[in-house]
Amino acid sequence: MARLKTPLERWLRPCRASNLDIYGSESTNFQFTFSSAHMLSVAEKVTLAASADNPSFPQPWLPHEPQLAHASDDIPYAPLQQEIPKSKEEGQRVKMSPQAEHPALLIPGPIEFGDAVLESMSHFSQSHVGPAFCETFGEALTMLRKLLQTADPASQPFVISGSGTLGWDMVAANLAERGEEVLVLHTGYFADSFADCFETYGVRATQLKAPIGERPQLPDVEKALTEKEYKLITVTHVDTSTGVLSEVKALSELVHRVSPATLLVVDAVCAVGSEEICFDNWGLDVVLTASQKGIGCPPGLCIMMCSGRAIETFKHRKTAPASYFASFKNWLPIMQKYEAKKPSYFATPPTQLINALHTALNQILSRPLYERFAAHRETSLRIKQAVTAMGLKQLAQKPENQANGMTAIYLPNDLKAPEILPNILKKGVIFAGGLHKDIAAKYIRLGHMGVSVTDPKRDDIDRALRALKEALVEVGYKVPELEADKFVCS
Image 1 (tube, helix red, strand yellow):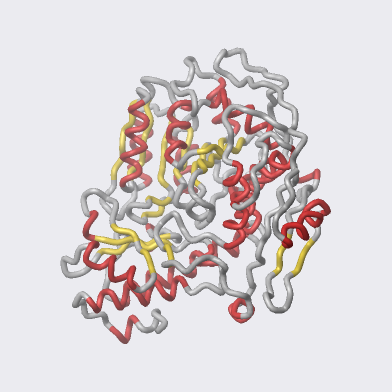
Image 2: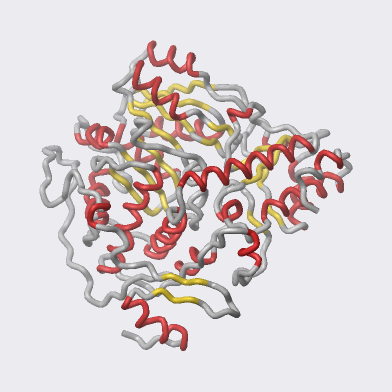
């Protein structure tokens, strides 16, 4: 092995090997923890329902992959992790972030990343079939089960190099066949795109649309399901273009009652990590997401959880999937092997991003999930109250339609997004412009997910509300000062 170059690295190396906990000095007041190579008990490890060692599928497009041995020149991955303070007072005693000064990125993804997540990206290069990386990847896959709240061993997590959009391809290529019908519930831009993806594979997509800021109503969904047989129904849990939150639990109950053979697919790219998802209890078949939003990891990972029912649907296809890279044939045995912490290969995984995902999930699960979701609800309520106090309206005007991880805000007085976003940026905060093609210039979007919400030493939300108020004043809008100041810290 090449000699480690810095004194700190030379000191840390034996600590990595022995899984020690290391505490910073009083001058830094940081606490660092190395992840154990055996952080999960045997009882917590999931027994996989199927294995590539014993394929039981007769179809030629079903999984098969070569047997690989571990690389022998590997060192366990052990990222430094900064413990998040439990109170604002404690947070004030923590040394400020080592990240370079930059505007607070408060768009609906990518979001701000914690120091430990970024630190884990700087890990030295690893073999993707080495025992240390297999351990890390396996733990990450198991932690995804906990985040999405599934204990069913038939459920199958996937983590693949790509954006959340790859999840659409995986659904369309593997779970539907040419000529079959799918129902796409439309709450904004991303339903249009998902429908386009289905059509690319020869799948017939019918969209059930709602007005901007609304969601399709359950009686209308029930009517559609009784009129035609659909292989899949898709719903965008939070549409990033509008900030509309869909009622996934009630929708699932309806689908199971009215059309029990229809698979329910949840596009949760802008929901996982900021909205509660109970995969097993809600009877979901697919949840797809990406790394860069509520999970708080850099972009580049497509993340998906499939139910046993969805996997069985794939196994009983009449035709081969019309995709090579997105095919379950290629990825299913790989994911099963990695979750069992064994080496496997179809395409090289992004090892640095998997390290970052492992760290992000470890931090999320270090506290009860209900506390995380409560923090997002509380922050969202404050932001929406502040927006209302400023005399502004949201695209999603009904409280039940409003997401907890983002807010889409109409601009007043025919103001256009390009006229105010530069002013907000000058104040050290980045908002996003509109995305819905019909009204893109008329609104802006504020993301409030991850460490910007859960880390009490950060003042991102205060800065965002203050920047919005001041920028509106600068362009001539009269903000109701007394009302706004109840929610905007000066």
